[in-house]
Image 1: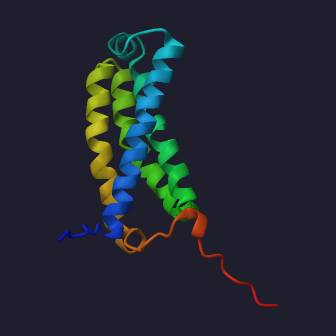
Image 2: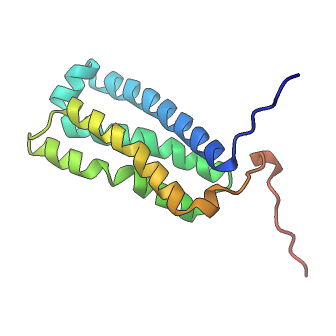
Length: 145
């Protein structure tokens, strides 16, 4: 007898966004390296704050696009964008001041991005606990004339 594993809508949202975030970061990192013509360590060394900014945008843009596609709405999507990008600001500043290397800053920022995402999700738990239908089955409100 097989048991079906049920994941709560909250954790389903988290896993979807986490997957899209990491996928975006992988693609964005490759793109940044291709444009700069450098390896990861060289890019972090020669372009520290730009590497961190690139990583933040690579994580955030696909996640927000996914959220909008899944019906989270603009408000939730923009709040999540802020929750993802704001933790990167101190790292970008510290890289610009040559206090941190790009690699150290990127790892620190990456480690903060997940608690930032979860923090907002728990703060707005009701919004992230609602089941989401498949995007192509979204219910469209009917307008009565």
